[in-house]
Image 1 (cartoon, rainbow, N blue to C red):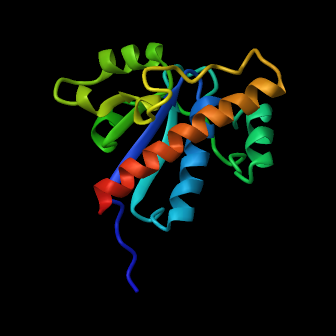
Image 2 (cartoon, rainbow, N blue to C red; image 1 turned 180 degrees about the vertical axis):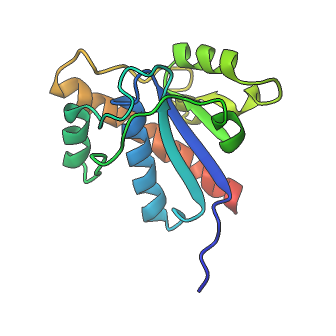
Length: 163
């Protein structure tokens, strides 16, 4: 059986690529795998800033994801690059600040690829994924709940696009 080439590419973006966006990447990959379509979708994450380039996700994010059966420990932070606007079909900002910054960075004709992540949901549409960086373990768990809701809604959208 031949493996199908990915037909859709998704990039999750937060500030430093160590909390929210790697969590979104890991959860979304898990949902894609469970749905049996992980070979059809390319998934990555990046930060708007280069504060943590090359570093693993925040240990609190790693632990919160691990408790949900998701391993993000091997991911490494990177900064959004100009070629990302060509490489990815959908670039998902985790909050409105990222959305504004990504729209400014995107070349003309590519701004429509930049969307707010939670806009795929019905009950969280228009909201930001809160930044847990300065919070406690409970905040990391709450952020996982929010990201999981977004990832499940995004999965439905991707499944409909691939159908």
